[in-house]
Amino acid sequence: MPRFVRRQYAAAGGYVFAKSAEEIARENGLDRVARLASNENPFPPSDAAVAAGLAALKEGNRYPAGHPDAVFRALKAVHGDHAFIIGNGMDGVIETVMRTVVDPGDRVVVSTPTFSFYGLAAAAQGAEVVNVPREPDFSADAGRFIEACRGAKLAFLCTPNNPTGNAVPVETVREILDGIDCLLFLDNAYIEFSDIDYRPLMKEYDNLIEGRTMSKAYSLAGLRFGYAFVPDRLLPHLDSASTPFAVNTVALAAAGAALADQAHIREAVAHVRGWRDRFMAEIPLPVTPSDANFILVDVAPLTGDEAMERLAARGVIVRSCRSFPGLEDHYIRVSIGADWENELFLRGIAGL
Image (cartoon, rainbow, N blue to C red; front, top):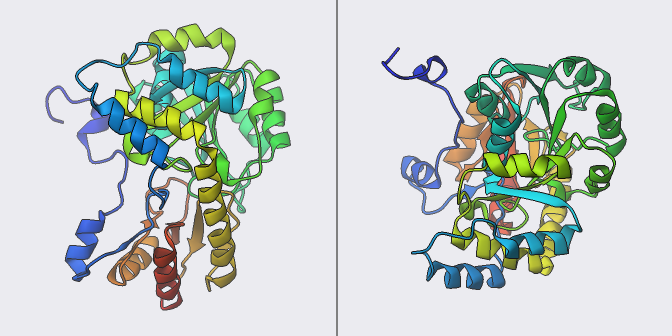
């Protein structure tokens, strides 16, 4: 092990990134490729968000406000009178929560297969990570999850879930909250693409955090703005643990303007839902029903890597799900992109 490096980082590991569009194009001699691997919004940010971000860039020589009241007012205008924290993407919010509540040796429970960063962030904090497998249809078993949470400090449940796309019913989340003593982090990164609303639960439970991001529906993936609804009693402690100036001036301005432009969100959501229905109907392989802006495709007898490489040769980047713990190695995750990208994918998947 290299000197000074912690054991968990001495070997290969960490978050797995999809190949870049530039790599795929270069390897296959293509002029352009469909980027359907990272659950991005194919639409650019709204005009209002772009204008606000450009104006803020002129103040880039100054630190942002320590407590950016404007963006908190924008969040409350959309969501109502809740307590919020913000961070450098959802990842930054998760890290703040970890620093605030998790001591080395604490148990952190994760419903799997899911976004790998929960386990990575917990391990970085010195926690014991306990994975709770979902059912064969990727639903969450409340009883099994509750049992795993006994003696835990924090638990993670992603809904709609990445990479499976399915959402956990509100009543199942309520059952879990009624049965656990730990804090539950409900990751709602893809919630705008579903019909489910977990926000009323924030008024009922003081052990619930609902994480959100503006990377997906709001088209701000490159600016990294995340936020979370948090219990009032935890807010001052979370603020104390937050990284100073974690969200930059441009992201703050663009996020505030994007929140005020809900028409942009409605357009993006309508686009995703229309194509999601087409994918479900036209993909000639098993597809998991999705409430997100992506779908999970079972490509057996191919492996996820094999399907990914074959589609890349056709100019389509998708995500092999080999790196998701608890998921068998015959799935790919496909984001819903622009019209031309989706058409190219449907032609490619038909030829696998």
